[in-house]
Length: 255
Image 1: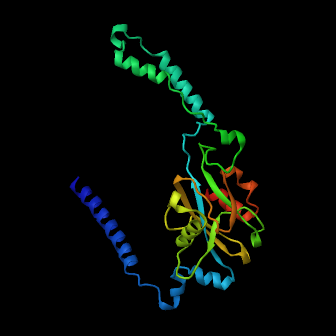
Image 2 (image 1 turned 45 degrees about the vertical axis):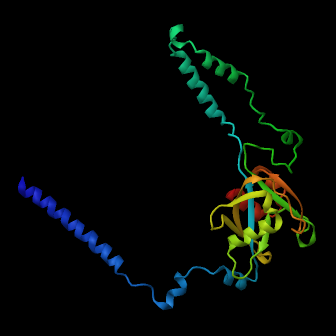
Image 3 (image 1 turned 45 degrees about the horizontal axis):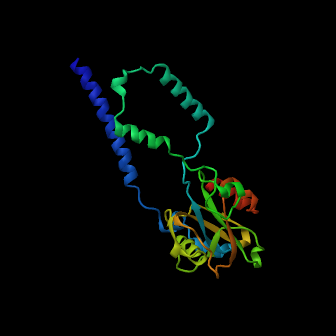
């Protein structure tokens, strides 16, 4: 018995030594030689843009989060009804004097019975007013803008500005928002420092998208923003406005 236990312990110790030696080998591995330093270096987006002849743009994806709880899917509603049926089936009726409400509780019950929730379908929904934030309350809405003309041709897009030297892509996206929207009447919140996605459009340049949540306020376009109008659209409405296939494909995956 004792010898068998010793054999097992010896085998476990040998296995531990092999694992330790393996990790020691990995830890002692020397850094890559200077000749291969370029392989391990982080990519330089400015150098990549210069090599390809394109430009870099920071894009602000301003979104309004849902303000009400979305309707449950059909299967979840069926499950709730099934649970309610089971509860009612096995519910035990208690004596009246045991469950009788006090006057204060009865008054609170009456007040709750008179409560009428606000409609989930708003006037903006009925009128299909896509300039209003008071629509699609159970979904995310994204702000699209249309330029006054020029190279954009009046096509709908997202707020963007060209990246300047010494500026991070988030700072470029922040500048795009500040130059297009009066931030004194809104409270924006940029989510993270890394872009949520990017797309290369050939000679038109590369777009880096930074998501920004609208905490409060109603955005108003600045006079010198270069844009003439704006809309608030849901994800399923984007194909009606975004004409570039590569950009639309990215937005549908990213949002």
